[in-house]
Length: 239
Image 1 (tube, rainbow, N blue to C red):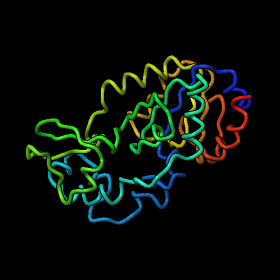
Image 2: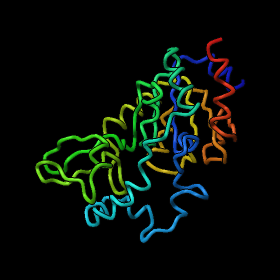
Image 3: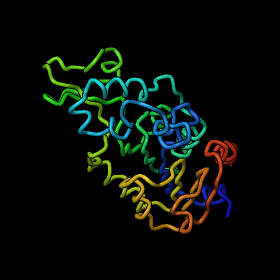
């Protein structure tokens, strides 16, 4: 059955997405040829974006974070828009994302599980007070709370655990879905990639430019641009 046919015959769809969802909004993919992992810094990005580095080199962390992790000019692309529309139609029940850019919510999606957190949430390590993104971008050096504590982005760094509630909600949504669309991810980052194993339905669709280790168990594999696939779907989802 075609991708459109599978969507039309489903009413409990979950979308699981990675960096490829946001690249068409101008946000770089960490692992692509021109992504962050292939750029040169004093430290590799995976070192800078670790809990240890944040605690021991906080100012250097924030130099990198402000420069390479925050893209406030980015706008939702066709994939975000189509997913929000599918939710409005009652077909899509949840978006599970590895991205931290908030673009799904900006497009109108309501049920979004952010496995790796969000740049829009930040909190004081000392008193727990929450701050918006403005506090980070409008401060220099290490952003400090009014209590004097260091403010940390509510994003999951290397060496840190995923949020338990978010993880459990994601597992539940995927387990109960009758269709799982996986898009824009190589399914190589764990534990997030392992969530696909909780899907018990028979409509697993993988959309990615390159093959993944899960292609053999998918019911439909589309090796193409996610934006192109969603653009073709858009005019037909209400018919």
